[in-house]
Each structure stands twice: as structure tokens, then as C-alpha cells.
Length: 352
Image (cartoon, rainbow, N blue to C red; front, side, top):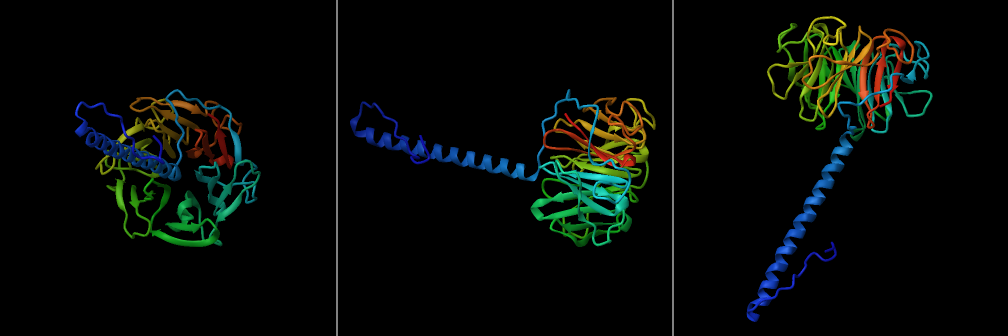
């Protein structure tokens, strides 16, 4: 059977010569229909795969995956400054499908791009001096857009990938510390002051509360100091609940969240976090946390009461195995882990 010949006639051995032609014709039609259906199914499958691939990429990470303990500096690491090989108090980052890094370089009031293998960065957004302490960034190449938490100006802005000075405010009056986007193109913005996360359709003037929004507190329906945010393919929202020393998961349309990491008070035990800052989640539901004051990256398997230290067992410092106030996390398509090492003014890559 080939695409050039849709129909196949199956030979029939029949006792009634008068009905043989009719039976052969019927079977030919059935096979023709089945093959057409098969081609349509395969076509839709490949179209779906292309759509998912274009939207995002994700490495398969199993529960026993390990990362090298010593990181590689892939941006900054040359002291605080505004040179193209420097960062100054970096906050969040976004890793593209081609391993290009986009970094919110907060005290330099800019977003910088670092391509794989390059020794210096390029400014892709500064708004000609309009940005003030940006804390997170998301890049949507399909829309030629860079979305930025412009924390100091209490807004979220959109800039063009092709024009670093082109900038428009899309959300106003928000103390934004975390920003992410789902596969449908909805933005999720954490509001530190309102202790909530809202989902926004780009272009709309009103967002929908998807986590928190019930004042500061430690109840399951509350947050206290919302920081970085992550959304999975089911549109479940994971948000760092900074002052409650925990990470919360809010299923789509849920009225309250559940604790998926920490939540047992401030501390350095494996069951605890201390002012966490960032969270990412893999395809198994394993949670990875930037545990700021403990200067470590933790992994919490789904349903686990305790986490595991992945990076930072050597304590506070500037060695390749150490961190100093980690603030941001991301995976690339291969499962390598990137950490924004805040007070070391660098981004570290830990290979899987």
C-alpha cells in the first residue's frame, strides 16, 4: 500500500460468480476508507508534535537523575558591573530552545542575551532607560516579544526582540517578582504586594486570580510574599511562598493550594526551606527549589516529606560548587540546570 495508490483490491474466492465483483468492490471501498483514515491520523499526530515542539522543549528527567556538583559560569562571574561580560544583581532568567540565555540584570536595569559559546552578552531590552530593577523575563519568539517584570516601575512590559528600545506597558500596578507563560500563551504574574498570582491573556486589561488573593497569611488559600512562579501543562500553578518558607501548588481552578516543598518552618533540615525564591517542575511532578538563605538547590519528589540537596552542599561561597543567594532556576532541552547566583553576579550551568 502506498500514498500513490489509496485503494487496494483483496482477491476473493467466492462460490457465486454473480456476486464476486460486487464483494470485491465493497472490500476495495472499505480498505480505501481505512487507509484514508490512517493517513489523516498520522498527519494530525505529526502536526500536533510539531506544535508542541514549537511551543516548548522539555528533557526527560527521571527521579534518579544527578547533576555535576561543579557548575560552569555561562554569564557574568566577573564581579558586579555593567560591562558586557558582567552582571549586577541578576534575578530571573529564561532559557531558549537553542540554549540562549535571557537574564534579568536587575541593578543594570536591562535584559541581556547570552548565546551559547559566546563570551559576552548583548542588551536586548533596556527601554532606553525606561526599565527599573527588572526581576524576571519570558521570551516568546513566535510573537517576537520579550515580556519583563519591571519591578521598580510596578508593571509588566513587552519589548520587541528586534528593537531594544521598543517597549509598551501591558499590565500596570503590579509588584511583579515572577513571570511565566503557558503553552496557550497566557502570562502568569506573581504580585508580591497583593500576595497572589494572576493569569493574563495578552491584550486584556483584567487578569484572573489563580493562586492566593486572600491577603497575607499561611492558610492553604493564602500566600505571604509571592516570588517566582511555574505553570505545568495542566495549567497547575506552582508559586514560591517566600515568607511561609514553602512552595505551593494550585491546580487549575482550585480555591486553595497544597504544600509541595517545605512548609515546616524556617530552617536547614531536609524537610525545610529558608526564604525560597524560585521553583521549576519536571514532567514527573518533581519540584526543584532555589533555597535562598540555605544557598542550595533542592529536589522534592512528588509526595515526599523531605527534599534532597542537588547543589550547594559545600555551603555559601563563590567556588564552582557553591552558591550565594540563588534566585532563579531553569532547565534547557537537555536537562542541564541553570542557576542565577545572585550575590556572585553570575549564572551557573550544572550539567546533567
